[in-house]
Image (cartoon, rainbow, N blue to C red; front, side, top):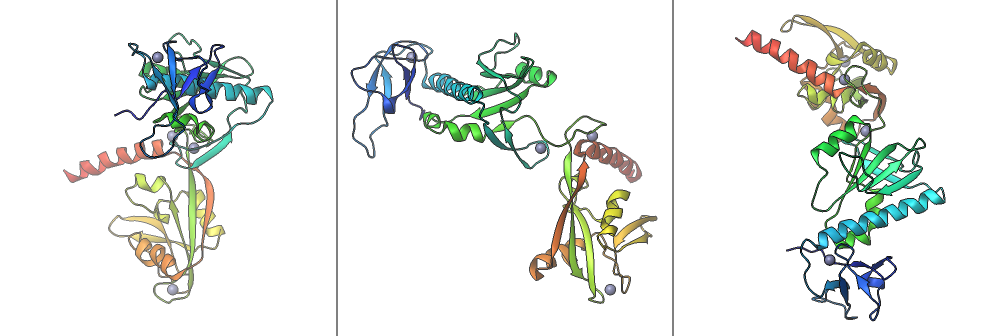
Length: 333
Ligand SMILES: [Zn+2]
Ligand SMILES: [Zn+2]
Ligand SMILES: [Zn+2]
Ligand SMILES: [Zn+2]
């Protein structure tokens, strides 16, 4: 059952009026089908009493509360954006980035000079289009009640570097919550991280953690470095140990006082770096990083420090890893 009611209508002058603020005796019209509406407002509150809303005298084909909600939210939000543009006031937004995995925030109107609803882009008609200084569409806001943007629209936005901002609505109550819905969009199709010069995708932050622990063998103080984030997930492990560090990462760890010693693996017949003890020379094998250091660091409260040491490209790493796997498979035969 739909929980969406007609809670907004237009008055005889075409202004959008919320049922909450509407008065009996005035004329109200449907925002979708333009039919005259009845205001349902009992004054009573409590269980079973519906919140103030409008109702049609008779059902109109193709007019649904979802369409009315979509129309109303779109226009109210566009009006709000217009007000901010007029008085040159920023409009903060914050979102979880699907490219780099962290939270971003910024001013939606930083590069925006104009706003328009249902702007015709030939292949599509975004709910709200935001224009930059050069009158190009810089970003679009799509309000989703039942219909997600069409594939060809998404393709067009991508090809033309138009940032898609999506706001999902589930109830007419979202209209009263417009401010919050605008600040926290459900999706924003951009990222603040630099793009990879090889594949062109946004990169992810590389975070190196250094634990000030103790040597598992002689118990002397010992620093241990590892990298967490998306990079190691590619490698099928949740923590990346120095074996997989780049030379820059090795140098960074060393500059922070981590002893990385070159070890030789007979099984892999290759040299690699490992977190080592300056005193006795014992080192931490990749498999013991978690059990001997990461987990004890939490239990023993060993000091740990995180460092943002740059960016890496998940796309390229995954590609490289997949290519490697093919080689591994060849050996298996
Ligand atoms: Zn209607
Ligand atoms: Zn991002
Ligand atoms: Zn890349
Ligand atoms: Zn030691």
